[in-house]
Length: 336
Image (cartoon, rainbow, N blue to C red; front, top):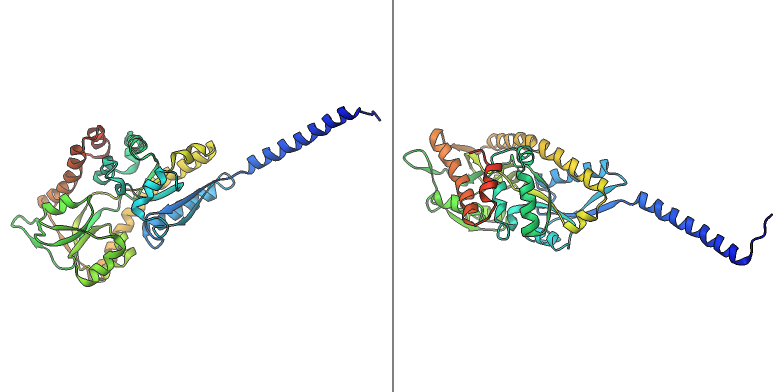
């Protein structure tokens, strides 16, 4: 047996310990899992929130050991309208909700609202990448995906609406729960937009403090507002503007595999969600009608003019904002 001098033995022992330590660290790194703590702008009862939860579950299943999304709550933790700002400041890792909540800082949010194309089209033609660029510049967020645009808005009313001589909707003097997104369009119909937080809409309808609202059918069902609303105006108009947003520092810190998995699942859900929401919207409207809701349909040329007016109000607002991306976004997100 060879006898080592004391100093040699110490170096040998140190090398052995270092090797063990490096092995332990390598093993830890191999087993490390990137975790994103996520909020949602709407409560868990909302249909779109449930769709997002399914997305998170799909990521967690495919990314086991690599990446995990923990949906820790909703607007009870951070109010929905403040969540994108919180992501931009790095206070939270990730959120799901309407990008129009940041419309004041990012007028380009209108591109999602005014679009009439499937999300797969705008991702393929460069529209999605341009929105990512604008969001990084204006909001300091990374947009991962856009969900459920096939949930168009419909106007729902407590009473049958009046019509003009050419068959157009006449909402003169009617108070509609609205947001800045739709004020110009509602005003063109003679309505008076009123600002009411989503959680207070139920009470407002119950008390008759306003006459109706514009909202996606699936979301109306989730909030149980349909028990008060008696008429739905067809056709629907515009698209929903729900997206997934991640703090840039968090996105950059993720492993390459984690970013790949998140992107792959997001793209899959963008495509499947569009088809799913078309069916869900039709199913929900059928349930409303089965329960007694009546349809006020705007036919023919009047119907086309009604939808065009909704889109024009959005794209004209984006153009008036002075955004350098206004014309390009319209070309990439709108078919006409």
